[in-house]
Length: 241
Image 1 (cartoon, rainbow, N blue to C red):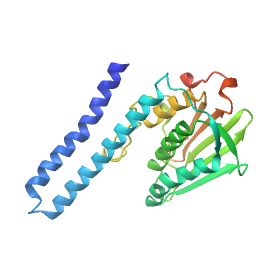
Image 2: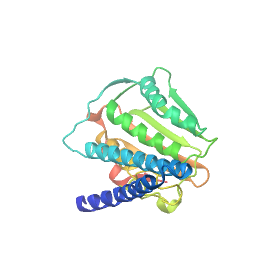
Image 3: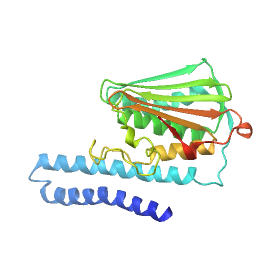
Image 4: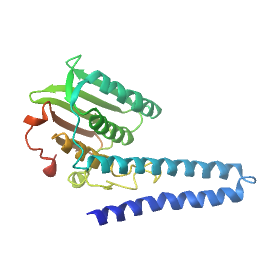
């Protein structure tokens, strides 16, 4: 598995690096003579550099959540503060795409028990995915609610959805549903849902994914309030619908 991981990582990193190199060489030749081509090359470099940064950050996040020696640091958290952090980081991105980001807490003033770093990692990747694959004018909704044994986190969108044949593989590392559905500089790293899976596993959480092509996707995460009393996670047999 480690060999396959390194091979996949190398392959994924090679493409943007080659594109950056070619764009830079072209830019060096034409920057004085062709302003339009210069601007185009700069855009290419910027897009691929952003993807490299995202991929390297995702690799770091994945390596951390996969480390069995790192134990969750459970503490009381205000649900409002957790969602405020998501609004601060993801709100501007949604606004740029003309997507409505709705944040809901039930009941108001909800307090939860969890590891703030792992929980933010789960939310960040789920909301990023939802925004990325939701067209302009759509909606992404994040809900934190009480659950009988802890709390429930639901991220839903009105995006393009996932075809049924891909549902049982989307939590795999580097798995892309359709690499052609967005430009190489704009598509994801293929690591976001793998990070979510391992972060949930560390928190002994459960996940359910529902999606309809053309109508959107909903990811539901159930997390315990007390890890010492939590049932065995079924993430190794994730439930997908």
